[in-house]
Amino acid sequence: MSVKPLLFMPFLHKELCPDALPSALLQLWPGLPNPHTGVYIPDGFPLAPQDAAQYLEHVRDIGIAVADNVPVHSLLAAEKQTKRPDILKEARDIVAFAQGEEFEPVAAHHAREAALAAQKALLRLWLLEERHMEIQELEQRCRTLSGDLSAALGVELEEEEKDALLLIQHTQRLGDTAKPTIPWRFVLENAALFLPEHSTLLFADSALCSELRETTLQFTNIPTDLFLAGQLPPPRAPKLAEAPLWQAFGMKSARPERPWLAKIFAFLLWDDAR
Image 1 (spheres, helix red, strand yellow):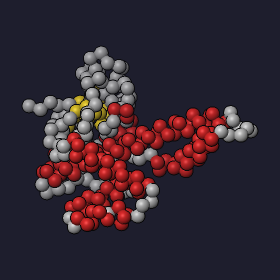
Image 2 (cartoon, rainbow, N blue to C red):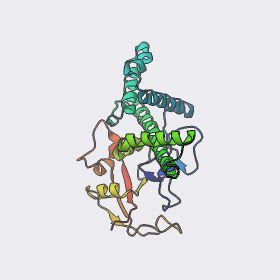
Image 3 (spheres, rainbow, N blue to C red):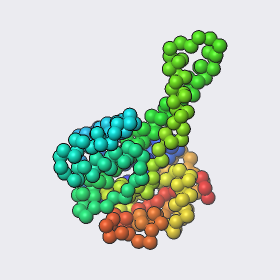
Image 4 (cartoon, rainbow, N blue to C red):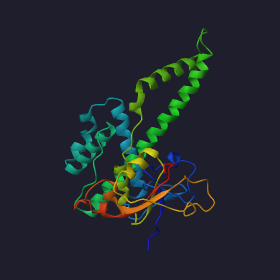
């Protein structure tokens, strides 16, 4: 009998998880080497940890190349030489991901093919979260350096201060487009291939919780000590609903080519809305 985990969604990194949550809460691990503490490692990942790390590095390299305006045909040159349509399609998908194009749902005729596509999608999401955290750190550094620079107005700037000014100007040009939005449905669908049914998925983002409340899910209030057992203060009225994933997505039924959407999960809303 598989363990039914309590998982924080839709992010994979613990750094993106709020502090005031149950200690039993786990993060889904995408199958990389050296897993952190407090993560859930599901069965069924098709990639060995080292292969997952190699794939992640490949995606990262392509992302850097795209950011440096390397022509797409140059990025795909090596894959074209293999004359394998599957490898070429995957490379094109990675380039599209690096260019910020729309996320496509998992679709495959074979279970292993679907699992491989889902794990690779989770690894790309892991990288996207890393980029988001790096940008947040960069913005914080710029705010700090901007304060330091304001005190230096009217005097000759040191080399470090000149670099800081350029950095501030660069991040201002990036604007909101530098903050990637991770689609929660895409995360959940790819995770669903590896999670046991009746796992509890906890959501703390108020906008996401509001979106789930607008679905046909039937939420009920739950005792605050059900998941806490002496933890930090819970929200005023946590709510729980059990339903198949397709219902949480606002669909009318599961799709034959995506049977994992029929899996039933417990959706736990952990925000302050009543």
